[in-house]
Image (cartoon, rainbow, N blue to C red; front, side, top):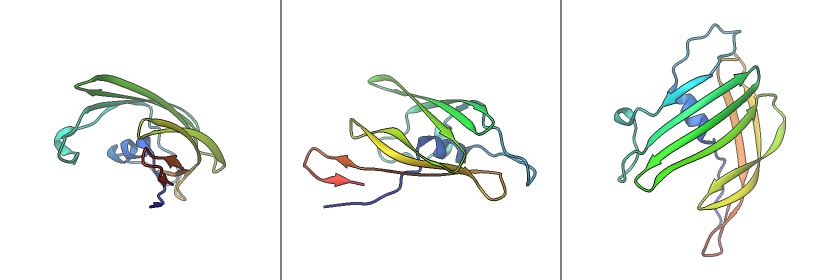
Amino acid sequence: MRSKFAAAGAALAAFALVAVSVAAAAKPNFAGTWALDTAKSECGQRGCNAETLTVKQDGDKIDVERKITTQQGDRTSNDSYVADGKEGEFTMQMMGNSQKGKRTTKWSADGSALEIKETASFQTSDGNTVN
């Protein structure tokens, strides 16, 4: 079976949790440390893990460190976004595998939010490809 999807990325989900009031022409600065509010989150039957994002931003370049704490221990991943509207490669972790994908990051028309489009293909253990 072949599925298609466009992943918005972990950081985008985190950015959606941050309420930012900005003038129409001003671009928000996401810099800071953000913790997932598990009481206000829907995490399925397994529940939520503790998750923290540390964001550093310099203009259109945004670096994100994501730390997830589970019963098995801590996992940390790093990612970078450049909001220039140009397609570039990135590495995504999914189903225990690293895979290269393509990402485009740009500011919304009013400059108040990021728009991120990602695509990647993964070979699963049963031989299916997920796009």
